[in-house]
Image (cartoon, rainbow, N blue to C red; front, side, top):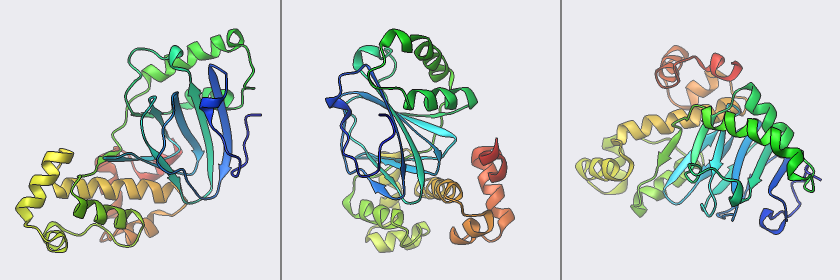
Length: 256
């Protein structure tokens, strides 16, 4: 049975099958930090998920899927209703270039392939899967890669603030105020972010806002609510911000 209830305990490493697909509906979930011996493709046709590892966090709206390589420690969380799809692959099936964590765009065909494979019987013979698998790998390798990943500085003072922001308690402040909150100089904060994330603090702050905007819009907030909650001066200012990073308006992004 491929469709699982939210309460069912599931471990793909205990199932003897080359490809394991599952589907479920979650209302709220936190997987905790864990890893698999298998690779995993994670996708949500409805809702939004957040994927975290030791030093990075990624957002997964319905337009994207995450490729999680074997033995990659990660945590998946979601707050609202999510249609969850996950496919696990035995290492023997993996192409040589599939051992890095990746966020990729999902087109209509790849979405349908994921949907079909998520509902496969676990005892389906591999020869009956082969044609679909071949097409899946073709679409997988041609899918555009997306940059919706934020690296998190390892400084414990900064990580505490990031956790606070991610819980929705406050928004990241401007550099001057944040430096005071951390108890470090603006120069020190800038140096830490450049070294450990490849971005200045202000660039990182904007990327965080973009992640949060996509998450909230995917969960059902409208543009006006999202713009207000992210402290933009107007709806149009938020739409221009979104277009700058995603090259399209929020409406087109979620309805393409």
